[in-house]
Amino acid sequence: MTLLHIGIDDTDSPSGGCTTYLCARLVESLSALNVNFVDYPLLIRLNPNVPFRTRGNAALCLRVKIDDDFENRVKQIVLEEIERGADLSFKNTNSGVAFYEGEAIPDMLEKFSKKAMQNIVIINEALKIAETVGAEICTFKNARGVIGALAAVGTLLENDHTYELTTYRTPENYGKPRKLDIDSVRNMDSATSPNTFCNIDDGRILITPHGPDPILYGIRGDTAEVVYAAHNMVTSLEPIERWVIFRSNQGTDMHLRFLPSISQVRPYLSVILNGEVSNRSKTISGGHVIMQIKDHTGNIDCAAYEPTGAFREVIKNLIPGDLVRVYGGVRPASSLHPLTINLEKIEILKLAPLIVKFNPKCTKCGKRMTSAGKNKGFKCKKCGLKLTEIEKSTFEISRNIAEKLYLPPARAHRHLTRPKERINKLTKKSETMFAPWHNP
Amino acid sequence: MSDSRICEICEKEAIEAECPLCKRQIGKSCLSENICVICNETLCINCKNQLSDRACNICGLLVCEDCSVKINEEIICLNCSSKRRF
Image (cartoon, rainbow over all chains, first blue to last red; front, side, top):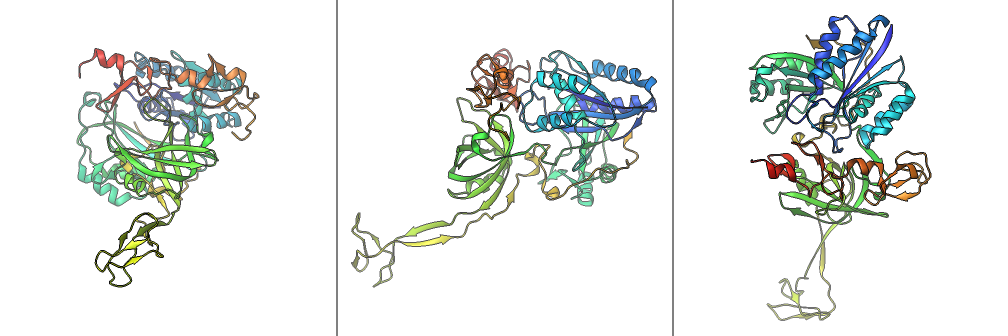
């Protein structure tokens, strides 16, 4: 028997398709061969800031135990499915497949996966890694897909993970509005949250995507059992062609990496950075709010975009001197703006005192005094008293933000962003698999 | 970035240069056409001056913010937007 790890990436395009759908079809084809799946299919989100991505920068991995005689047949099925399902006519679709045989994943491949989630990886580096670890790769066009394919194989998700049950539409409904019973989604959310998350935000349904892809809805949660139960509570008003439960790094913050200083920030990284607010935020055209933080190595802009809604109010309430920890993706500089961190969340570590100064009150009549001129003290307009040896009164105003973590609403989250329901929560890998985890 | 003396990309070579676009400290083999190999792969196809922001939703080419427009939440490069009616 051979343990075969199959990584797949970059098969879709903006006009349709989805690598998870291709994977779901493969699950059906391979199940028919009675292969033994040793894990759920993995849905791995890679660095969300890379410019090459189509939508959510997802790569997939299947781990199957097969008779040695079956190996070539399985590989053939995978490649046929990609040739049939990938939108290779689109310039930016560069599908890649990686096959790796072995019980253990090499450390080098694991390290590569982490890099592909947090940083940017070039094609040559992926090709070299594949050669070094002995992974067999099949590439289409410029071979960029091999990066995600290898990264998916190298991701083990042993210390934290989530699940997503994804349902798929029948082809005649592609591109049409998705039809779900909204009340059933609300009831599902009430019954299963916080063990499921990102279902609804302020009345808006989040489980359905909006593009032309084949996904009807996806429910995310902490266990396979809960996403299956939640799926059974949702009433679909259109036929479901198939569904699969994926194990995933969504909602885990795995893309974020702590950097010790601003000088180490580079374009496209996903970073965690400590800094001091260096000036009041400003609101620019479109309702986006820009603030700046600094440390001993420099300063950098941080942006809270309009879709983050009330999160922007937190940013607007920051004042110079506040100590913060920012989390986000680094947007490259352009002629319109400098290098900028697109905020995914912010933790206020220490609030600076907000001091306001007022002119003193008249010691004779109690009326607020006015300035008598530079270095000339104050005068009272009511009783005419003049005082030179008096200073402005200072008051500390209570801040309307607190020293805690602030997240944007769920609708503005990245796939990888740890939602409020999962703060301080880790899900270890289970030894057993829930059944059923796919249909058909 | 644990060792500041080695290339930020390959993490093997000694630092020889700084990429003018991303400021990465890089070794000789990670330099390509006077910029680092990462910037070389992510450079805007249109102006070749700035790093790209996204791929054009129509032609798929990587373009920077200056060389693209956002139409109905889609990033479209200037070339495609001039050819297409919205």
